[in-house]
Length: 392
Ligand SMILES: NC(=O)C1=CN([C@@H]2O[C@H](COP(=O)(O)OP(=O)(O)OC[C@H]3O[C@@H](n4cnc5c(N)ncnc54)[C@H](O)[C@@H]3O)[C@@H](O)[C@H]2O)C=CC1
Ligand SMILES: O=C(O)CCC(=O)C(=O)O
Image (cartoon, rainbow, N blue to C red):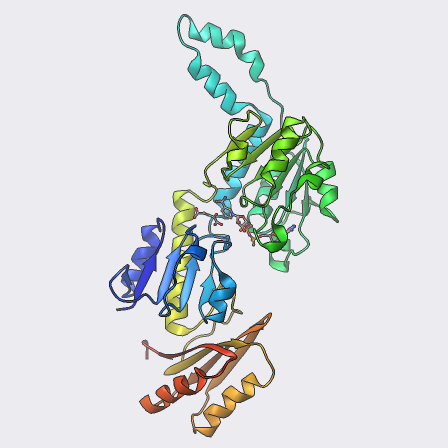
């Protein structure tokens, strides 16, 4: 039975799906697939038997994607699976940034002795807040999470402006037409009373919100980070809070530099931690993993181009290779030279990586062996798999 290794708490919804398909979970065999959430895979040894690694979640900065690509390992995530959960916590954070909810709860709980009702009533004046209605929210990153946050903020009667230079057409359709599109991030920073960041942590976005950008915020603005630690320069945020150049900073990522600061609220990376989001993400992850391992089809991969076609022939050969000239003709010639008839050939590229899926109806054991012997020697080919159609 094919073994899948897991890290972190993966919802039974995903694990049960895999066992129903005949997989073992964390069995004794070397794993063919890995399912994880926030485990730092940069620190883990990933066995050569692994063909696919799936992040049940959106961010994949915890995965050494480039190394795995060179090893021919497909990497997947589950975009949108937990977006609603993050949206709801971000809205909660917006409300906590407008009203001193945390301090007020603390005050009420600590009011002990005598007529507590009278004492809380008498002293509640220190816990007055403001309203979100009429204020401007700036949303940086209008993907699965940011677009939902932006749309919901409109329903709270906020003015909303968004910034996302990489917005794809699918997401653009989801953004309400009443949301203003900023031409640059500076416009968002300067206009907004609240700024929320929903972008991935990658080399370009490390400290995307740095001291220079924080200096452009209004001093009465609040900054929210439910994306990743490292996207906001926390030390710069703390300095701005201390200098009264920023009113409040709420982040889902603990950082010692922010502890014990009354202008900061820290939650322990719980943006995606709802029962619904964990179920949805785990099930998406499990289905994508099974789909890839059994059919070679690629859905929601971060390192391979998408190919999702019905598996109607007896066999498929899946090849992950460099996107270089002559590769496709070399592959096709091999089959022609050995008299193996190709029923269908699909090839797609994503940057410098390409994926080729070849459908066959006849393949002997010797030819199966030969495909591996030949293609495993080609430098530009990272991984070759021959799949038999189990539904056949
Ligand atoms: N706190 C938590 O538990 C969770 C955190 N996240 C984090 O939130 C991030 C966003 O999640 P999704 O919206 O699902 O991802 P997504 O991929 O759907 O959207 C990200 C958007 O950010 C845009 N973007 C990238 N760099 C940008 C920049 N410098 N300026 C403006 N826009 C930029 C992209 O074009 C894209 O539209 C994830 O990468 C992850 O790190 C996601 C889910 C849960
Ligand atoms: O709850 C988790 O697994 C973390 C979610 C997350 O950070 C993500 O999806 O990027």
